[in-house]
Length: 108
Image (cartoon, rainbow, N blue to C red):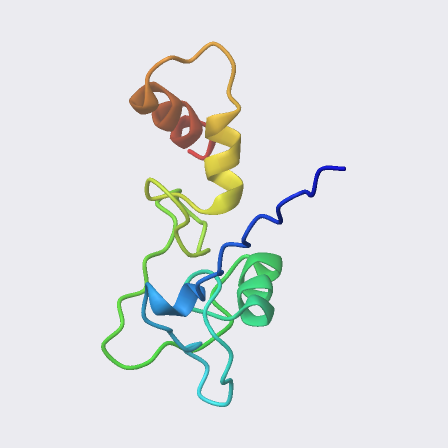
């Protein structure tokens, strides 16, 4: 009968060890950040209301979506999550600038 050798389990390193822990911008909230510098609860509020519902600390720049009339915070490439997903899934467009110009022409 052969004895099976147990494999040693790799020790998991906490994520906080590799990057500094950031706290949510909301003054009464002590949770760690999830997106937009906010915790999970407050970042969901930002996305559901499609505008900045949480006041920012003094001196913090607010980067809104570049699409005219959209006040949601930027997600990627200067666009909010909704407009970024629309551009990303656009068919027949090869260049990122073409995609953005198509999106901006829809909002004029």
